[in-house]
Image (cartoon, rainbow, N blue to C red):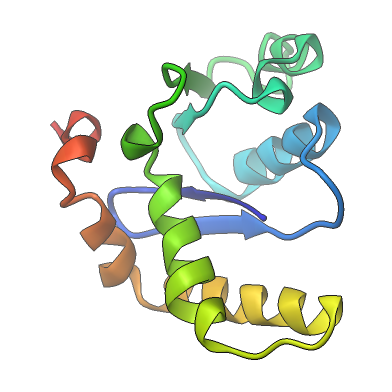
Amino acid sequence: MISAISSKGAIHFSLFGGSMTAAKFIEFLKQLLHDVSGKIFLVVDGSSAHTAKKVATFLASEEVGNRLRLFILPPYSPELNPDEWVWKNVKHDQIGKKVVRSLGELMGAAENALQRLQETPQIVRAFFADPSLRYITE
C-alpha cells in the first residue's frame, strides 16, 4: 500500500503485491502528477525506493518539471510522517477488526478502508492535528 494525503483531506493511494520498489514508487508519482494539479510537496521516509537514483532521474525529468518535490524525513522519525496515520487507520482501526482468510480479502479490506478515507476527508484532515505534523500546516 502506498498513499499520499493533503492537509485539506485528500488521499491518493495504490495497492500492489510484493515490496515497494523504485519502479512502483515512480508509477505512483506519475499517477499523482496526473490526478493533482499544481505543485506537489511529498514527505517521504528514507526508504531505498524513495531515494533510488531512478527516482532522482525521474524527478529531474521534463515529465515532472518543477511540479513535484520530495522531502525526505530524518531516519527513525515516523511521528513526522503523515502517511503513518493512514497506515494506523487502515491497519489497526479498520483491517485489524476484520477476519481475512486470503490475500484477496486482505487487499479488498485495505481498498475499502482507503476508499472510506477518501469519502471522509475530515478524518484525513484530523491526522494533521497531531502536534508532530504542525511543520506541514504552518
